[in-house]
Structures are given as structure tokens and as C-alpha cells.
Image 1 (cartoon, helix red, strand yellow):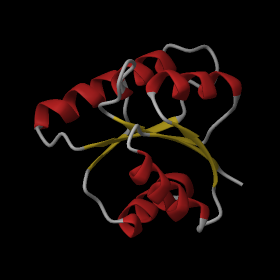
Image 2 (cartoon, helix red, strand yellow):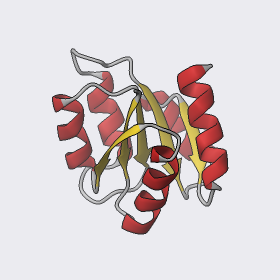
Image 3 (tube, one colour):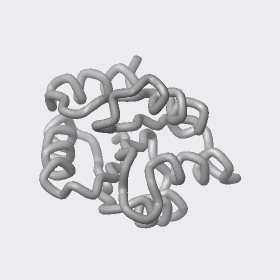
Amino acid sequence: MKKILVADDEEVLRMLIVDSLEDEGYEIVEAGDGAEAYEAFQKERFDLLLLDYSMPGMTGIDVIRKVRGASVNSDVKIMMLTAKTQQSDEEIARKAGADFFLTKPFSPSKLVEIVEEILHG
């Protein structure tokens, strides 16, 4: 079973994402902020990280930079979820090491479709 870390400070959105992905058979670990997300990353191995761009304290960008600099599982696939729609925001995320970029709002079915493509080709 593929394991996904979902990090978003918006609890309702996080619950929607988690429910959508669990319905497809994925094992999900939730984090309410960037620090919690990085702590989970250090403890477990994930197939995909779904990170909100703007979280209090440690942002999604901060988490990506720490993950890409880690000695273990630094090649994990990372998708940035964000309400930021500027091209410069996507460039910042990609330079930090994000593999995919999805803007909010998005449909749960679109998210599942993208995750399926990432994890199963």
C-alpha cells in the first residue's frame, strides 16, 4: 500500500484530501503544519508528500528544502498544493524541489487522478 503524507493547516481541506485518497486505498498520515510534516517525514517512509505552500511557522517550501537535503528518502515525490497562482510561486516551489504543483481550489477527483498518475504511471 502506498503511503502519502498530507500537510495542510486548513483542517477541512485536509480532511477532504484524506477522505478522497483513503477511498482509493492509500495509507495517509496527516500533519497540520510544516514542522509536524517534517517530523513525520523523519519517522516514516512515504511514497508522496502533499504539502500546502503557506503554513504557519515552517512553510511547505521550508519542508521541501529540508526533505531534499535529508540523507534518507530525499528523492520522494512532492506535490505542492497552493492558493498561490503566480508563475513565480510555482518557480520557487520547483527550485526548492517540488515535482508537481496544484492550485486551489481543485476537485478531489482531479487530485486523485494526479496522485494515481504520480504513483502508478
